[in-house]
Structure formats: structure tokens, C-alpha cells
Length: 460
Image (cartoon, rainbow, N blue to C red; front, side, top):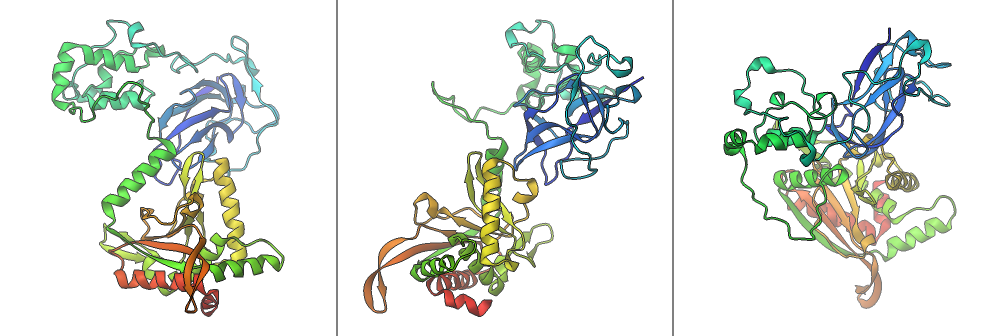
């Protein structure tokens, strides 16, 4: 007799607590192998395929495409056992592989094709492909508040529910949980109107409309602080990458006492050096790579800026390696891929790594590890046609170098007025890790290397 196993959204690492379903890779009735990817999800940092640790027949899917699920919420249920083995593939077993993301854990190749068990027909070994009674069918329609049964919900405040009522709650949507939590409604006291008793948003709203519940929950309800949006206004959810950026920037502003210093530099010699390097043949070297190489040399002289602040220990932690982040604008929003051990790389190697990570970022294929662990950020906002900026530090780093556009400007060169290629450099730094003298010394060294690349040779 097959055993129905529930596979929940696994911990995706890097502190991620939720993910949005982008695309289902299997349907109810499909036969899947151990570690076969079953869904593509988007986290705040990347899009990843999630493999299922069980092999067998998919009996239910939880959540439509576009639904946001918290870590630990059910994803699918799979009927496993001898009767649900995948032909020509690894045998299904109730003890899964333990795989979390594609590329980690056991290595099973994806099957060349998938078998679909038609509803009502027998699966291999006589198992019916129907959804288990306790499971929620895939693509279950959500009734509107107007169509919900009038007597479906009788709710009481959380404090009135006895401790013995603790247990699993038939609700999938994190939005429904949040709505109930914000208004003091205990979901255990609701009778869901969805399939198999699933609690829907309409059920919570119906409970809130009950006079007794509304009166009991009134003290817990927060007063409305945002005025009603005017007609025609558009609301854009702060979730995914945009939400992660908002959270990180807000935290940076709250925790880091930042300051900014800037300087104009004559980049004519730097541009000439790059042209000579590329004319010599071999892989092309980008301006960003040259600036990155200058940054790593500057950080070797001023290691205070390659650090982080440990608030719990009340310590400044200087980091041994430079994991250089760089800002990349994509269709999904601003992303900061990280080049590992940038201090060990040549200009050619940095150019190649920047190109590789930028291509992955634009394709939405960066792994979470590609977006975390940075120790210093290089922000080339000159590509947007602007000269200067005061960027927000990429928490928990301690500094960011900003680079404006490089354009011809009048400049005093060797005592005479001339037209030179000028760039504005800015350094935003955490004032806890160093004083202005250190920040100024770092920025001045960077400017000196830009104006005379030969200065960099002393550090190589």
C-alpha cells in the first residue's frame, strides 16, 4: 500500500523565510523520481528549482503560480512505495534524499520523460492517482467573499482559545495568516469554506464582520496611518527582490552611521592604459575591472574598510579576504553579485567574472551564494549618465565606492587648461569602523591610481 508523503518548502538558506512559486514543473498525477525538480521558486535573492526528496506519484500541489509560501509550508504530496516506483529510474522510498536545491545533495539525473497518471485510471501496481482525502487539490478555486457561506465562521480572540486547541491549521496562504494575526483572530476557531476545510481569506473577513469578534479584536487593531489611495493609484507589492532591497536599505539606514566623501579625478591616463592593454590582444579588460583592481589594492592599505560591525559582541571584525560586490541593474531590480577573493584576481580575471555574473543576473539565474557574503561594494552609477551619488551601504558591509560617468571636462593639467577625461569618485563609509582620515586616505589613493595607473604597480 503506497504511503503519501508531504514535501514542504525547505529552508533555502541565507536567512530566507519565504519564496514565491514561479512555475510548477510537475502536475497532479505525474510520476516523479527522487531529487527531480518539481517547482521553480523565486526568493528574495534568486530563482531556484526545488527537488523533491521522494519518488512516486504526485497526489496534490499546494499553491498556484504567483503564490508566496513561507518556509515549512506544504508544497506537494507524493504517494511513495513499491506500487509507485518510477520505471527505469531510482526506486521510490519513504526516506528521501535530503536534497535541498539542485546541485546539492545526492546526484540523480532528471528522467528523460515523465509519466502522467490520468485521473480515474490505475497507476502502476493498482494505485489510484486520485488526490488523498486530506490533501488540497491543485488549482482549487478561491471563492469570493460574496460567495462564502454566511454561517461559515465563528471566531474568538486568541486569548479565549484553550491551549488544548493547539495543532495544525488548514490554511496555506501566508496572507490569510497575517490578516488573522493582525486582527486577533485565532484560525483554530474557524471552519474553512475551501476544499477539505481549507481556511480562505473570505472566512477570516467573515469572522471579522461578526459583531462579537469585531468588538473583541478592536483593541488589537492598529489605527490606519496611511490615507486612502486616490482613484487610479497603482499598488505594487514590496516582495521578492524589491522587498529584499527595501528591507536591507532600511536596515542599513537604521544601523549604520554613514558618511560620504568625494573627489574629482583625471581618468585620462587610466583610459589610455586600458586602450593599450586591449590593443595588445587577449581578453578585453573593462574599466570596472581596473577600478576593482585599484579597490583591492586600496583595501590592502586600509583594511578598516573591509570589515563589519558585530553589534552583539560590540566589536569591529576585519575580514581577511575581499569579496567584492558590484551593483547590477536587471529587469528584476537592483542586484549585487559578489566576486570571491577579488584580491587574488588579475584585471583579466576580474573582467571575465564580472561578465559571467552580470549575464547570470540578467537571466535571473544567480544562485543565492552569488549574492551573499560581500565585504565591499563597487557601484558604477556612471552608466546611468550621472556624475555623483551618496549610495546607501550594502549592510552589513562597511563601505562602498561610487563611480560617476567619465566625460571630457576642462581641467588644469601640468599648469595649463586642457580637456581631460574626468570622473567623480565617492566613498560612503561606516563611521564606526574608521574616522575621516582613513576614509580620505583610501579615496585619495584610489584617485591617485586613476590619475596615474603606474602608482598601482607599487602595490602589485
